Image (cartoon, rainbow, N blue to C red; front, side, top):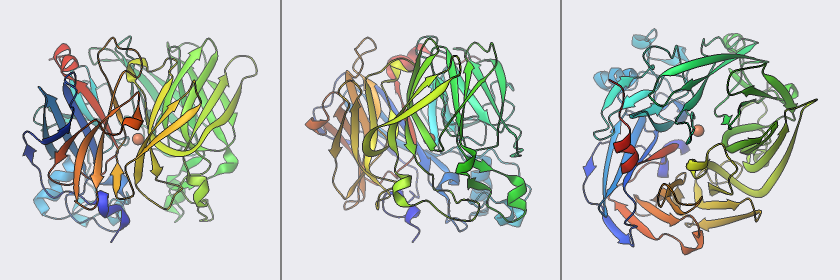
Length: 472
Ligand SMILES: [Fe+2]
């Protein structure tokens, strides 16, 4: 059995709606909204080898209202999903190599797998996957409404990790290799979506090489993109080499662009590393601070096929202090020995100085266990990482922060996470007190089946849902 298809990763084979999940504990009356989560969930047994990064996206919704929790799940009905649904079997290889597809779809143009993240902006719920345009879902029924290209202004793909500016209402995004060239010189386009959902401007950044760029950072004044040395090369792939390769000798190159689009992009270099996810970043004048879960080396082979040793894979909270003025420099320091991933903050403070970070911990890359077994809180003032373990037979999702009220202070709220029980083969939606993890779960909603471990999710409050409506 493929380890990425077993235990908490085992796909669900059905869609369902469950009203009124069984509840336990003291459900906070202020919690009103929907937690959406998404991850890979192949519709059919995949063409081997299975790569979960390209498994069909399935969205799960937990609607919380009037002290009740209702659950629904749906596959995102991408073109690929529809073709396979009609065929009754897998046609597209999740390896990403078109030569491994079923010949009947060898030349099919798809709109991706929509399996990585969800975001709510300008009245639209978007399922995101970095190789393609977002796919819009109906926020109530989870029905697939189709690709959303911002009225044609998005020419290609979009990151799965756009940033919402809580003050301006803008969404800032980037597209890695929008022309899909994957040549020696790389290209990233970043842009701004206004609060009404219109792309108002885009900017092209030429990078030293085409690379894997999964996330980025947006502060009040800057956009920061780290080009880590995981190179992507179509030429290399065509000659039998690895399409993605870890080339640490190329170093990490950090692009710093002014958010207003003026001036030249500033490039600074630092030692080789890899980052899947950024926690947050902010700036004080020309000095920037960026916190990320950093690996010394990623799980990609070098050009001669070597893989990193496990300890290099461990993701650890690391602070980059960036001086973008004068000669410019980046000073990086690891803040905690704890291996942690899926960083989240109280997003009402995105792009500003924040005190609290939340993570999945106790497992994952760099450990013998593919699952995270705990939730962690890092207090940047105390310099302390506090962990809550759910035990060796429970796997946790990324924690999503929900404030008690819009005007509450940072960290006054809850963490929502989905916890899978391997022994019961069921999952719970768990509520934690973000200020005091040691209290343990303060409330649970029991799902009568497994919710497979996914990637990311978002919270859409009832108030936010009502106050935003999409343009016709
Ligand atoms: Fe991600």
